[in-house]
Image 1 (cartoon, rainbow, N blue to C red):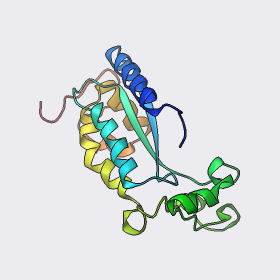
Image 2: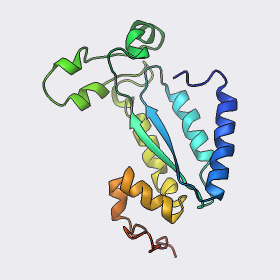
Image 3: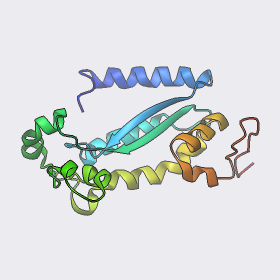
Length: 175
């Protein structure tokens, strides 16, 4: 996505700052956008390896908020769509989705990011996230868990660890 000219340094700085914030109990969010044109299984594995490297001790205040790429007219990708089609095999099936009827939210997200992630592999990111979801939930402090359930993952409110009352801390099911 070209967010940094030095991605390794960017990620290391993120890791360092996130750990400092978690040590201080400061809730923070990393927004991840999946199915960006050009994404491949290899880039997914890199992303999830980074996520895995920050998962583990159960004292994290880092919430991973996952989203799917939405294609908008006038964006960098839209203005350079031919590049993504030729370089990666990206497909944009709903040209002019914003002028159509129906579920425009879904139509804006119907992108095939690359030849590698086409067909039934288009949602590989979702399967990879679901494989880790319990570990990501279990890695959060109670306050971060509650915040994530209220702000991003409403289904987490069914988890016995969730309480809408910030003064009540529910132990993990294993406790």
